[in-house]
Image (cartoon, rainbow, N blue to C red; front, side, top):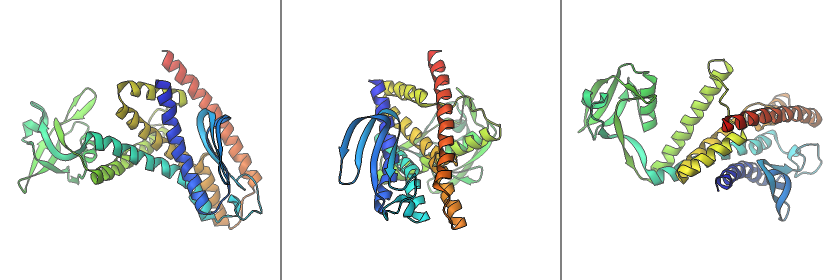
Length: 331
């Protein structure tokens, strides 16, 4: 059952990614031969007016096969005959749809659980917030002179304090009060001992979901930068097998945990595809930007060679990470 849930999560994420490419391709008039979920042998196939829709055996990705994508074509409906901006839009739509999916998934979570707000529902006895004088019903408006709009802002500012004293400004009965609070560390987390009031609202869920995707993207970019500069370790990078295992573990806890993990994976996939790595969407966008600047098309054969080498290296890296994942699971 857990394996089935894992494959379903992968399938939905890949489907949304490829749907982005497919929808914009059709919108700008590109002929699409195949819309595939998975790789390898066909398990299911349905032929539409112009496009064959397939599900394939290996749940490791998917693709949209378009006229003129890999080679030059005289067909006016070919990918290669569309403008640079139209081709960038087609490629960019995949990662964008991953972010859209993440927003939708977070909305499902917040509509079910409620949205943590900046209003204090309760304070925990003998912890810094209560000791400083913060009360239930207070609305946190600033921490260390930084305005806070969401609960994520509150958590971020408290974490940034690294246990040092912080100034918290709250609104109470239309008056503002400032308290000096010294966070404490408990079970590896920096806390002050407040519980947020939860609200259930569709529009607020959408707004908060967008904020959440933004914050997670920021954290991922920060981690990527620190990894590149040697300030963080990439030893815990997880591949397909590791992700399947994580989804399976989440399924044992509850469906909302699966949805949360799926949203994180979707954001990760969207960001990964935007990196200028050969064979990924980011590299194809980079080639098109260069073409736009030069005013001249890059040889499809030369570009395909770069992507082929990049794909081979990515496959080698995937095999290595999968090997590490299996060792980690066995241990």
